[in-house]
Image 1 (cartoon, one colour):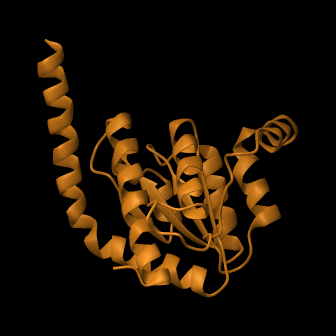
Image 2 (cartoon, rainbow, N blue to C red):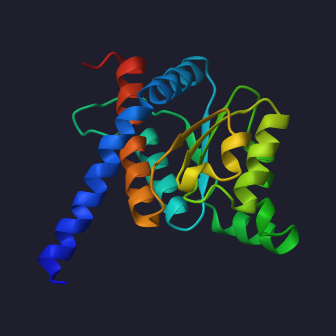
Length: 194
């Protein structure tokens, strides 16, 4: 297959998935409402993921804390990535096991009525399942961005957005799109942007 045909096919696949995301409108609205209320109430958001999803978690944390659009000079939105501190991740992985890396950090930083966001293409990573269980036990609301029909994380999450795909790259691209869209709407709600 030529590069042009391959590229055209990949773009077509992503376009189909993004068009299907419109079917998640009610879930997206609820998530925007909950995140807006969380921030307006003085609480914070915590986010995590593994591998490429960890990179996306860090990326979205930067957008929330700094800003999404250069024309919007605004106050910082408190969002902490549980995936960003390599010393904590490796110490916890070494001492308690990789499956505890996020729940241990959430134990240290999370408070009742905060919101946890998990990014997972499979919805079955043990560390994601453990942090969702910890959140539920400690009255921290959870939102999961998932793929592959949601995996086990779907039933442990208060809200979930499931990208209708089994392709890891397309799921991650869709998660980043959703994260940017949701942040843009939360910014509008908090800072009264048009």
